[in-house]
Length: 196
Image 1: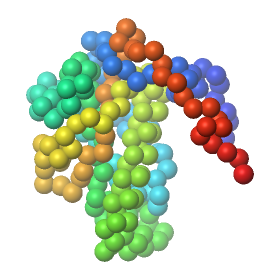
Image 2: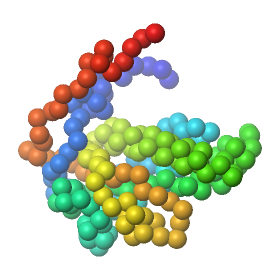
Image 3: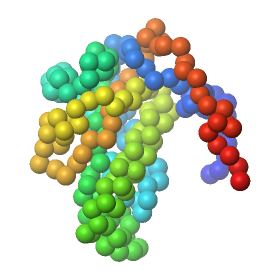
Image 4: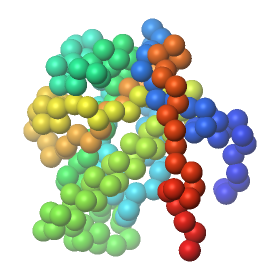
């Protein structure tokens, strides 16, 4: 615990990693997706609330269901990706807190507080989506996270009968570097941070 990663690991996770737009025609096996979930679920969330719910859209039938709900700029690359993950947030996450946070009555912190439920679900599912990206990269996968989609349509098509709301999408697979744009600039430390 607490040991720094070597440069190669930092390169894999952050420094050389890119958001992919094009994909190799190479399957992502289901057992790798199981391993991915086993890793990402260990990332911290407030009160271990773990609101993320994931749908791995992999079959042609499921992709065709998703396709009309994507923005035009995201449809082609998503159809070419081996997998597109819908990262959702369970708005009833607090019902599971007696199991996930058994040492306190955390469920009572949320019952009857819709704004707190909404903020906590969104914040922590977004965190878990970021853990998914880092875990996928650690397992040798490339990622293409994106926002451009019909949220209500995705919720109706993939989360019907639940209180789960979509957050963002992330394509997974083995990227084709030929589809990359030049890397966009990033802020310097002084433009985005300060030490006080």
